[in-house]
Length: 214
Image 1 (cartoon, rainbow, N blue to C red):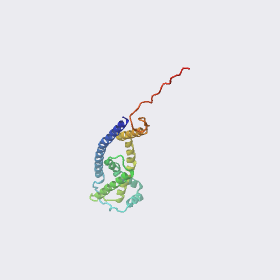
Image 2: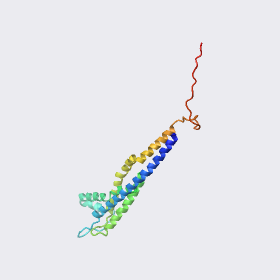
Image 3: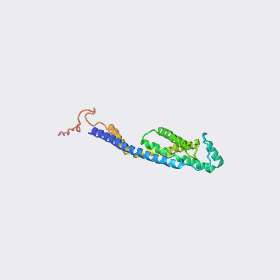
Image 4: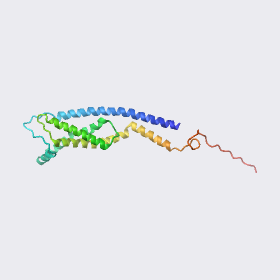
């Protein structure tokens, strides 16, 4: 009977894990895609709009050239440029892992994949600037985009995944089933003669002591 209960608990935990995990993962992925699309539309609207300016600087393909020039001329303007560039694509550092919808993944692997995908997004944004009047490509801006993505990922994703793993219902059910199985394995064998076979027996009968008259 105890073995049947343990097997049933494992089956229920497995079903709950697959059903709940699949539904939750699908919802997370859909939410991630929708939010990422909205974010990219906002980036397009605020970053890739034509600028009516009489002239623009040449495209910068040398890393840190613009940053050094900005801080050398006006530190406050350079700081504003740095902060704004960090925040442009920073939400992608959270939304890209959200699309995968997985809680149990390697932290280093997730970070590497997010930074790579974010680098591709930053490159596309900078390349699109070359076709927008009044906009020029700048490698320093692209580097700040990527840095913002990486910082947002490190600040939000690992801690959020750890919190969700602790609260996930399927994870708790699987953990409870595993604990019950381990506790059942540690129980001493009280059936049979200790060899694991035979049928259950009752307690050993005791013979009532008979008093002998003097």
